[in-house]
Image 1 (spheres, rainbow, N blue to C red):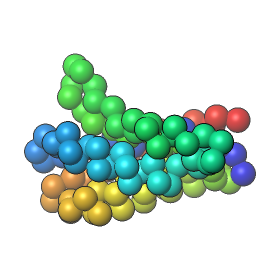
Image 2: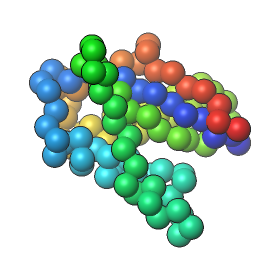
Image 3: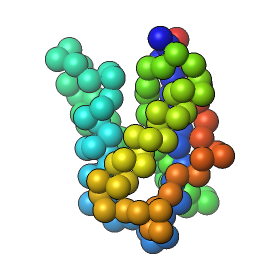
Image 4: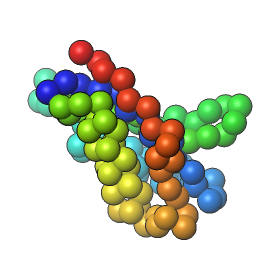
Length: 106
């Protein structure tokens, strides 16, 4: 298995609150493969980014997978699950599947 950095853009119907972004970061941090007793600060990782020019929101995840396509699929599922756990549906937030980008870290 290899490690991949995956960028998942998300389209919100309304601007997300700071509390929502914090909740999503917490949820995503619990599944970060870099989390260990030797690296506890990964819980403070900021997974969310917002483009200052376009206002676009995206989340960056590090995942272990067999192939690049598998990593992109895993990231989409994790982001969708975190959004659902935060109370969002496809009517209020959706991943932009065609724009997901994955790159190997190894």
